Length: 301
Length: 301
Image 1 (cartoon, rainbow over the protein chains, first blue to last red):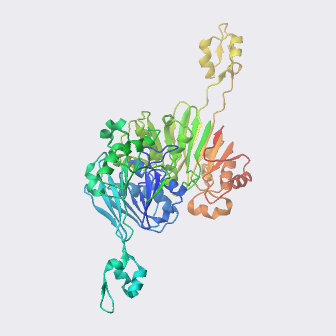
Image 2 (spheres, rainbow over the protein chains, first blue to last red):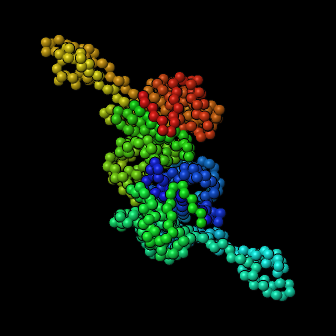
């Protein structure tokens, strides 16, 4: 599982900071999460192949999370893309994109689908053979969803040496990987655990931005491998959280602690701060495993 | 008169090229012309003060000419701008911007006005004491206007030494600058040309992008100080001009020649070309004064 941070700053792009956009690589899928202005250029700079992006997840309709979307779709049109693209996001995103495609007389060369959410309950929005994605209802100034990306459990790994020693026919290998025991030709039963080893554990990633402190999400993200949680402010500006509906680094860490996550990644920093290490320091007082997002940074888990 | 090129490439932004945006400084006004994705960042990099931009002129509704507009307006909102802003552009621009402001629940802190054009005839859209702006109907795949920016003639300049030698009372200075003759106390008439010198000549700038070769515009831009004319292609790709409704460098130079302009600036290059000097070379065969636009380049006239 790899996470590439294309941008992780709040509010407006500047000469040195990019708004939110991330690319999550999970079991061969490349998911784009949020798409602030300039994301297509950030993708080019980070050499991410456009055609590998088949799904884009937009958390909410604030400009720093989606103003780059229409430009990216238009570029896909100009490049003659033929891979289908599905946009997941709040109700309204379809109208915004289609109006602009209509008025610019742009015609998609590919199948462009929208899956809009309105529900305030967590719900499954994507599933394939290897991965599933669920919304995480957040609490912000507009309707906002975080997203939980979960790998499905893999088949058990064959212990080829053991299988050969027991003289198991290869025809049974598929069933053994699925967890079945095997009966040999001589009638002897061999239990599955003697023929297989545990698969790599399924990993998970929870993206939570933008939101004020919302402990309701803890059961949804319980035990995830990695949690990205916004931390727009430090505790010293906590009084701004109520009005702007954002979180502090300490609050993000509190969520990480309650949900017993593996690693917490902080981001969506207000540009008022110069030293982002202060965010890590504040969070470390509550939770032990804290990373800082940075534009262009890649995490491998 | 200063012209700052923020971006001058066609189609899509890349890691090293920016789509169309220019800032024209004319008699104290700062006019933003077109606003491709990433323009607000280019403005920050070029240290252009947002509050000095009071008018934005959008040539047409193709993404590389306006996808940066909503982000810029949103940033103005976040910064608490109070200076009014007027957007000039084709019908539709208002709907696109207002829909996005509505769905993002953004409220402008300033007076935001739209002046949409539909007419296929050249018409005056802006006028103040010093400058006037007129549309230049172009021929592109969607409704497109270029813009002609003209300084108004300045008052004549006082020749203070001459005025003092003739013993002209300062009370007459204003009238003299406006071109009037003066009667001295002794009844002697002094003609204006003895008391004044010619003002700096009024300058003008014509922005013509995007368009196919359209000699109809020649009477409108006749004798302008500077003409920016798109040259998406070289002659070697002239066969693409008909379908895409773009021009070659030679065609841009032909327009410059017929209109007897002072200087021709080329831009809106297709990213298929590596060496932009080829554009200058091609145009120089037709017209003698050719400049190449480049992202970040400033021209002073």
